[in-house]
Image 1 (cartoon, rainbow, N blue to C red):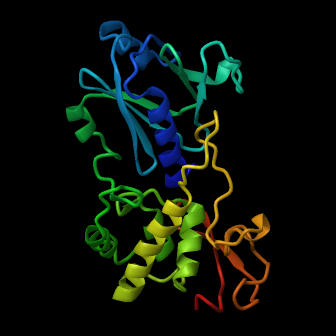
Image 2: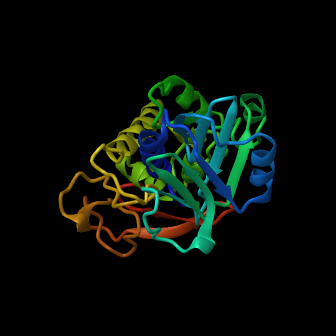
Length: 275
C-alpha cells in the first residue's frame, strides 16, 4: 500500500498538471461516479487543487465537488499528454480526467467517491484522520495528544493507526521505531515523553526527506526507493525493514521480523538496539 510520502508526491504532481485547468473530458467505468457526472457534469469545471491527507487524495473542483480516492494495495494515478500511449491496460482504467494539455488516469483505484465539502466532513474513515505527518500546518502537540490517547495499543500498531497519525505505513513504522530505539511491541502507555517526541519528530523527518521535488514520473504514485539511513548506497537505504536475519547496521545483531496486530502486518526490529 502506498504510504503518505507516495500519496503526497502523487497529489503534488497531479496538482501541477491539473490545477487551474478546465476539465474537457471525464470518463469512468464506475457507475456511481458516472451517475453523478450525468446529473452534475464534471466537464466544464475547473480543477481548483489536488491535495493529500494521509493516504487519501482529494481532487477539488469548482462548484463544491471533490473526488476522493484511496489507492489501497492496487491503485495508481498516471499523467499523460492527450493521445500518449498508456502504460497500463485499458481494462485497468477506472477514471480519466482530461484537460486540453494533460490527462490524469486512475488505474485500479479501489476507492473513488464524489463529495461536497459537507459530505466529506461526514465520511467515515476520513473525517477522523489524525494529524497528517506531511502537512504544512502539522501540529506536533496535537499529534502527541493523539498518540497518547491509545495507551493500550502496541507502538507498532499505533504508528499505523491513521486516526492517530495520518500517513505512516508499514515501512516507516519499523524504521521510525528503530531510529528512536523503541521496541515496537511495547505498549504506548510505556513511552516516555522523550520517546513520544522522538517518534513524532522522526516520522515527520523521514517522510519529509522522501518527498523531494526531484522525483517526477508519469506514474505519479510510484513508490520509488525510500531512504531513512541517509546513505548513498541503495543497498543501505533502510535500517531494518525487509532485512530479517541481516546484521543490524549499528550493533550487528540479526534483525528480527514478526507479524503484529489484528492485520498481521510484519514488523522488523533489532532485539539489541530496541530491547
